[in-house]
Image 1: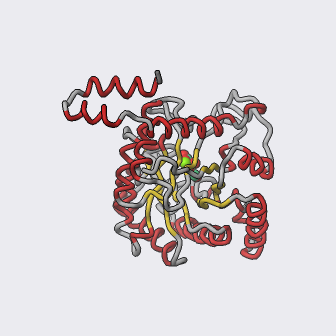
Image 2 (image 1 turned 120 degrees about the horizontal axis):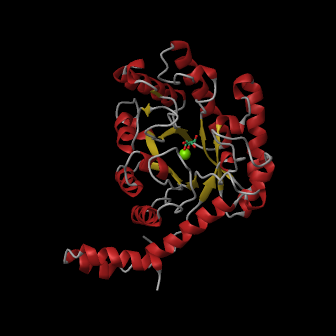
Image 3 (image 1 turned 135 degrees about the vertical axis):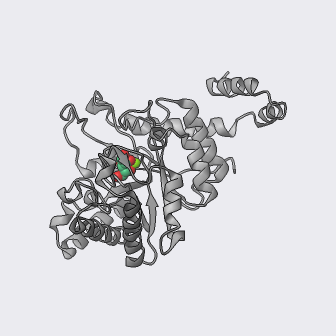
Length: 346
Ligand code: XLS
Ligand code: MG
């Protein structure tokens, strides 16, 4: 990879969150969108990612004309700030009609709602100037497996994907797999599943994927391997870097916070595959700790970007020749130590 290739960075308004968790209320007062947008540029980020109702709050309650008007206003704000819209994701996990899933709900009226909301999301994305829709199948799963027929759910997911692909001939769908949470088990839990279901759609070349570090770890996988696998298909169109300390609730920790070596190997995978050369962004889907004071509110984002850039340097100064010699000699113990000492620095 060229040694001076640079990356573009992104986060979403939800990444500047107020500290609520399932066991306690917010610990920071809500910040305005304008405040978050102003901070994004100051932190050296280039784009913002959106849920559809980040772009147009209460989107379901608004007419198509009102959605267009508010999206136009948002687009102007972003253009004036020199910030791109990276993607738009339909938030199909809040509304009561998605309580049992959206596309795979057992209720056909709810499945219809989820698809129609996704088509409106595509219209918002077009107006914001992005051709990327991210689909995190939050509630496409079950609390008990007998509640749904997994074979039928595959067909229902393909039906939804096909409706979106037919709605707009240029839109690209980036599936963000996650094995569980909020569901007990979710459908499409890994990149392999995402790339496989893409092949069942009417236009597989427009269905790709997004890797989130924590989601791969929750599936017991190495996010770097998931990156290499997705890149071998040319279908890694977005990325949510963060970290996760073991198999528990999705922690959305700052990048490198739990496992620096796993973070290093993700950066090496991005480097060797040339991620970003087609305009892809590095997004940090991270949250501040609940204990974070408002004065330190942005640290998780600036720290993640700083760690990422330091690991890019570590990747580009990796003692490749020494490493190859140890590999040739199958001396992996020495290789292990070489990596550790490279990361520790002299
Ligand atoms: C949740 C997901 C979510 C998507 C965007 O775990 O990571 O943040 O990335 O809705
Ligand atoms: Mg995410």
